Image (tube, rainbow, N blue to C red):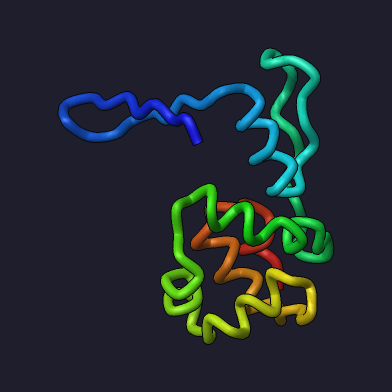
Amino acid sequence: MDIQIISRDGEPEYAVLPWAQYQVLLTAAGLQQPSTPAAQTPPVATATDLRPLAHLRNLREAKGLAIEALARTVGISPSYLGLIESGERQPDAAIRRSLAWELGIAGWRDET
């Protein structure tokens, strides 16, 4: 990914990336893509909407997280996370919330 980090007072404040890569991240997150940059913010996915799970690997890689690191943080094995990423397993609500929290996806984490 071609990301530019903009810092203020030595701390990262913004990340700027090409529009096409932003669109890929939106798709991976299961969010509607705005037709133009000025369009309204798209709605977030809900816990019953499992489409973001189909893009879990893309989301993890976009954040620069190794499968082992994300699995350890969420409290599951890397092999189980691999099964979730491949669509072979559907995680329970608690794991979905943890994944959402770690990946910064609003909408999953607040649901039961």
